[in-house]
Every structure is written in C-alpha cells, then in structure tokens.
Image 1 (cartoon, protein in one colour):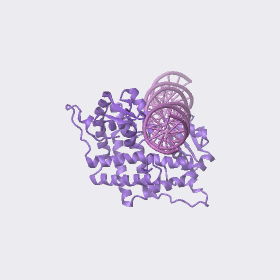
Image 2: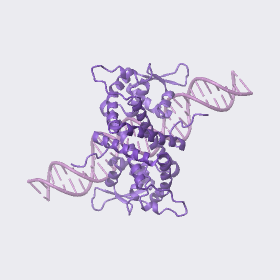
Image 3: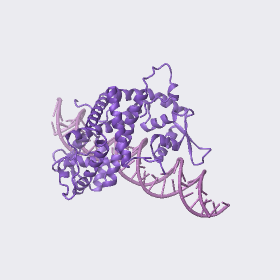
Image 4: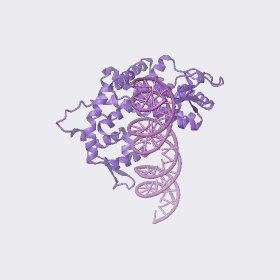
Length: 179
Length: 179
DNA sequence: CCGATATGATTGATGCGTCAAGTTAAGTTA
DNA sequence: TAACTTAACTTGACGCATCAATCATATCGG
C-alpha cells in the first residue's frame, strides 16, 4: 500500500529489469491522501457504530440488508450477493449474529440447501436505534466537508477507480456474470 | 457502513426522536461509490501484492517504512507513528515478520525499553522485488483512469474528509499532539 | 432411476486488528 | 535511594476475513 519509491532499497533494483514509472511528487500526494482516507474512514465509521449502538460495521451491513426486505427475510446467498461478499464470510458472521440473537436462520422450504435469514425483533430494534447516529456521522464526515460539486467529483473518481479494479481482475468477488 | 434509509425498519422509528436528515438519491450514490471503493481498493492492492510477491499489505508497509531509513533500522515506536498505527498492532505484525525472517529486533542501546527494528537482507530483497509491481498496479487502477484534474479533486476530497474524521475525535490513533 | 456435476452453505486454519491488561525501563520527586 | 509516575513494548482474548476443504441438496444426462 505504499507505492512510493523512497530511494534506498528500491534504487538498488537490478538494471536488467525495466524500471517502473515511479510516482512523482504530485502523484505521491494524491496516493497518500487516498491511502489516508482508506485507512481512516472505515475504522472511524465502525468505531462510531460500535460505541453508540454496540453493532460492528459488518453486523450493521447485514441488518441493513435484511431491513430492506418487507418481511426481513432474505436468502443467505442473495444477501451475500447484495453485499458483494463471499459466502464464507457471511456464514461466519451469521453464526455470531445468531448467537447474539440479532438474526435467525432456517432451511429454505423451496431449496433444501439454502438458508433463510430473518431479522429478529432484537435485530430490528438494533438497526432502528443505530441508523440515525450512523447517517449523521456519515453526513458530518463525508458530506458536510464537501460542496456538491466536490461530492460529484468524488463519486466520479471512485467509480472510475472501482471500474479499473474490476477490469484488473484483482476484484474480490463476482467480477463477471456470464458462466 | 450503510447510511441509507431504506424504508421499513427505519421508518418505524419513534416519533419522539427527531428524524435525522437521511441521504437523498444523489447523496446515496456518492456514498455508495465511496463505500465501493473503500471495500474494493484495499483488498485489491493487498491481493496483487500477496500474489506477486508473497507479502501482505501490512508487511509491505512496514518494509517500505524501514527501507526509507539509510541503515534500514528504525525504532518501533517511531515506525508506528510514521504508519499511523497503534503499538500493539505493530508488535503483533513484527512478531510474525521476525518469524519469517523479514526483519530483526534488538533492544535499543540508548533506551532499554525500545526496540530497534532492522531490515534483514531477505526483507530488503523482498521489498525490492515487490515495489515495481505494486507501483504499476496502483498506477493502473488509480492514476490511469483519472485525468490530472480529477486526481487533484480526489486528493482534495480525501483530505477534507480525513480532516473531518480527525476533528470528529473518532480517529484511530494520535489525533492530538499536545499533552 | 442413477451416477456425475452444480450449487448453497459450513467448517477449520491462519493472518490481521483492537482492546484491555501486563511488564520493564526511564524519569521525577522527595 | 525509595516510591511514584510515565513511556515503550508485549501479550492474550476476541472479532473479523480469506482460503481451501467439506457436506448436502439439486439438477442433468444417460
């Protein structure tokens, strides 16, 4: 996650291999700012959530996904797809969340392999309690410091970078659709 | 990490508490794009690193920090400060890295509490091998998709958001300086 | 109907990060 | 010098994510 040349070490690289195009000062500043955001925003959001409502970031995401369904019931695989997560990751998290009473699991009646994930009353009230503070925090750190134009520019940049990541094949999950 | 209202659950909130200012459609799109980037970029960079050079993202960061010193020797606490990490985090990582032979540790002669972290030859060659591919990947996913102006706008936005996070007190480490 | 393969989900091992103690060495005061 | 405080680092427990392996159910081709 560094990408700067930083003299030493790197300068000693074998001359036989073509030198890559190192970042110049301006680029390094861009990368530094982006990395700072990457390292800082997610933990800050998660920390606010945990402190104010006892929910971890991933737990909140799952509850939010479930709460979008009128019945609060979603197939596990579908939830994983919506979240852009792997099945394993969701499974581990659901086990912990079930133990806490936030969600419940039951075999799907239509497909014996699937699991129906359901929001429990406790889970529903947990996200209802958590949502306002979460939104306010997000608003205060990402929207208030930026003008509308800056927000739009940020969105564009994020979308372009995300597209490049997916094109690079280094994407986490489900980069393509066709079999 | 959601911040959208998403009907249901949230709409049922007690009328006694003042409704927060939910995100509108445009804002939701901005937040979605940003979250997508947050969830995607870091893993993608780490994955490229691990696949092409066997180094994890955090390991690379540590090696990069060490390689900035002429002797490849840095005090643990100083390294933690440079990286913006907690001591504990660094300590755990250093233990694993020492076991792999990437770095070595020795009690500081001037301060018996401190540890001097040193780059081993293996560590030095590891980062020399890893750096070019890393820079090229970063260049391809964050710089190539953006014009210079877009890069600058991204930098500004990141800096503003990071500043807001630090101002919020929800910052990870070392938010203030004065005792 | 049966075996081969697909798919949905779980499990276990390992690395990573955080938090809350703990340990040891330095400084500080008396 | 003895006692207190502060600072640097380590440790252990726990939650979280990934990977590879496993298991069970569906589905398809014969």
